[in-house]
Image (cartoon, rainbow, N blue to C red; front, side, top):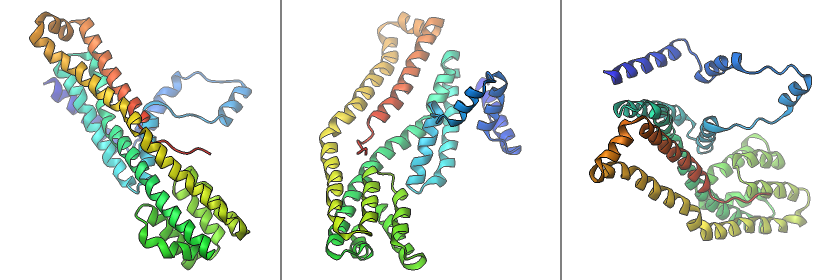
Length: 309
């Protein structure tokens, strides 16, 4: 009965937001504003305006997921991701209510809601590695062709059939712009640069723009492409080390969660103390909180290495 009331309450809130077209984040900001300390100092106001604000916590995770979906041309899936997160939020709260532990309600609700975002972050790490590998191949063959022909349009046309998405789509848009919209190659390269968020690719684009002025510096493109090869070699060597924290986390999480039902058979009094006393319920909520925080931290640790200029 309690679960049905909770579901009805959550659906009522959701329906109110949809009916009145209210953004939950804006609504939360408006609720928090009266309790925020107001800065009357002009110096503090200037510092607040000019200072680059760092996004942290759950909002940072959501924005990172949104950026990943936009980079992979799947931004239309973001709403589905949010809906999945909302239903998992309800599921986590219901599980906590079923086991009669009010302390773990917010932990399980928020933790379950973060599962879809954590999954997207894992996929993003895999996608980034595949992008780096494809980018290395693409830049290598295009650079080789450009050194021979000294014509970047011809070099891309000659090799576009050997390049796979998503890198191929980027270079196809470059060809479309130079042929159908504007023949200014420098402008086309400038527009090409932000389409792939990769430091080596940006450096390659900058060098390619410089080559349009002076063909003699085209040899500088080869060392830049070599950086991607070095990055792939180092990444392959560190692959095991990068995924070692994930393996350790999964092992420890299984042991931690598995000990709860195991305790039921080994020592019934310990199990009852853990599940039915106030202290035990608080311990369970702390354990759940540590698991969810560790999951996000481990996923961040498994990000592929990148070259920084």
